[in-house]
Amino acid sequence: MPTFSLRQRIAAAFGAAAAILLVGIAALMSTRDELGARQWIGHTHSVLEATSALLARVTDAETGQRGYLLTGDARYLEPYHNATQDVQHTLGELRQLTADNPTQQRRIDVLAPLIRAKLTELDSAISLHDRVGPAAALAMTRTGLGRQSMDEIRALTGAMDAEERRLLDTRRATLRSEEQRTGFVLIVGTIVACLLSVATVSALSATAREQEELNTQLQEQATTLEEQAAELEATNEELQAATEDLAVRTEEAERGTLLEHQARAEAEEANRAKSEFLATMSHELRTPLNAIAGYAELLALGLRGPLTEAQTADLGRIQRSQRHLLGLINSVLGYARLEAGQEQFALTDVSLADAVAGVEGLVYPQLQAKALTYESQCMDPKVVVRADPTKVTQILLNVVSNAVKFTDEGGRVTVTCGRRDGMGSVSVRDTGRGIAPEKLASIFEPFVQVDRQLSHPTDGVGLGLSISRTLARGMGGDLTVESTVGVGSTFTLKLPTMDRRTPAALAVVPPR
Image 1 (cartoon, one colour):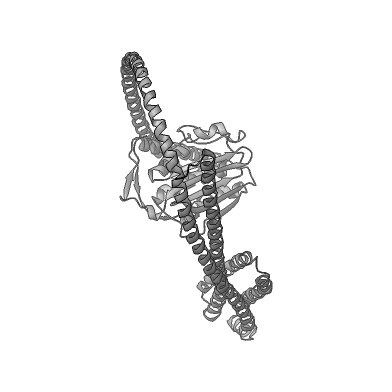
Image 2: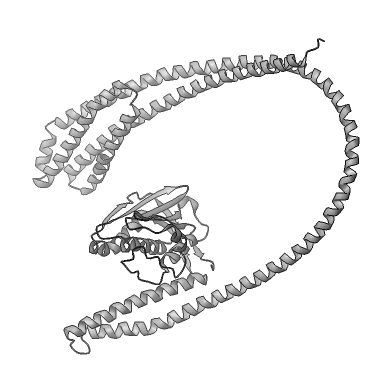
């Protein structure tokens, strides 16, 4: 067997590595081309689906309009409006998908005004039906103009469909060619790799013999290491003594931990006593407050005799103060129930769109009073969460009310809904002055009030956000906040969706 020098063995190893690298690069490029062909096939399918969806949306609009003209039933207008809203979105998506095809772009340029004209014609017939009567609207549809425009739309979408199917056949043929080339590269590469492996093994055999000689030298060095091991043993004895000292310190630390646990238990007991005291006192305070409300109502009804205008005004102030104080006490009672772990949840399927719509009606007077712009982007009824509907309303009402309270007149409050990572979410964004970063962590603590606008004093006892986050977490969700001073704040409520159902119908919030 010929003897190779070290330089020759290194050169052979580098040559083998370079050859394998070239084969790998060729295989990678071929695979990349094959993947590109598959992506173009997928892109063509997307264009076909968008073309079909566009024609279907226009057809749905026409069908809904005809149903309304024939029956006068306003329910037919719902698919009409849905279709007209989706047409422009689908047309834009189709234009974006065919950006690489000038022919299809020209067809879309012709198709877009045809669709707008068709929708205008449908809307005109509906308006004529509402203003003049069904006979005039039906007479308008029998002119044949609508059918002619629909035939032109079908012809254009058919031409686009045929073009994409031609491209689909071409791209499928390209994919088959790329697959064959990839197979060829892999077969040739495997053969080359085998040949290079044989050459490399031959070179490594020579290296193994040299390694045996090195092993002999290593055995001699092992003897020297044994002597050094004896010295290490003496060092280990010193380490053992240090270990014993560490054990003593660990025992002292454990005693300190025990004392800490005892102190924590005492603190938790004091916290429970505080919660029981708050619940008892709040309950006792509600009794005289209810009596005040009752007698004030009797006076307002005139059952104790007529009142002067000044007395009526004073009585109104008494009633408002009573309701305000009762609200504060109810907040303390709710917090005490949460602290004691007595809050229960009746979990069911809750539509976020319905929950937001219910809260909008409750805060509408506050929005009107401050001339705020309110925008709700929660129209999708499919966003459904597993939660207690009463608790969801309580949380949303608190968050939206805070957004109204801390937004200057003429500002904006926006509510959006969505679904992500198996969780439904509602985000409430305002254009107030925001919350300072150092205060964000404390706003969910009980009895904490962060006055985001110094010119507007806050009401309540600072329990709303603390109760809301505890309720959200009790239903398997959370309540978070993002804020920028001078820009506004966004509070986000997250709750599990229907596919993350809890096994029990009722849940209890554990003590904090």
